Length: 104
Image 1 (cartoon, one colour):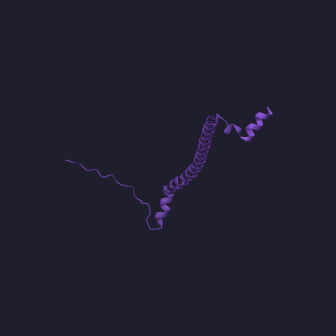
Image 2 (image 1 turned 90 degrees about the horizontal axis):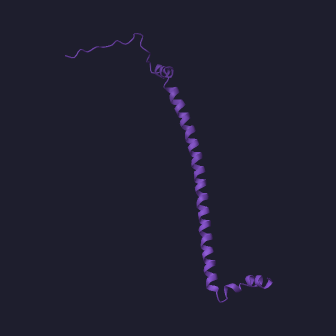
Image 3 (image 1 turned 180 degrees about the vertical axis):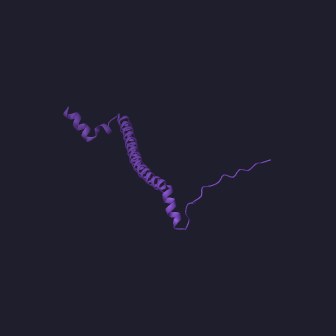
């Protein structure tokens, strides 16, 4: 048992007769580990991007609600009358009359 552990620590399995098989396995596991690490980094960056986009969506939705409430307030008749009075325009005292055109 002790001799086996010492052989592994000294690296004898890399220079013995069946070393090419061991080297191929080590290279294969190294490539798999590299792919796994790259995939993990890619997934993490996507998660961070999604979180940033969600925050941006929340901010834009809040801004939209603010603008919509401002526009609704500006569309009110009283607000329009106040802004037009500064220009000297007032509502008509007489109601509008309907014009009927008879086409022949």
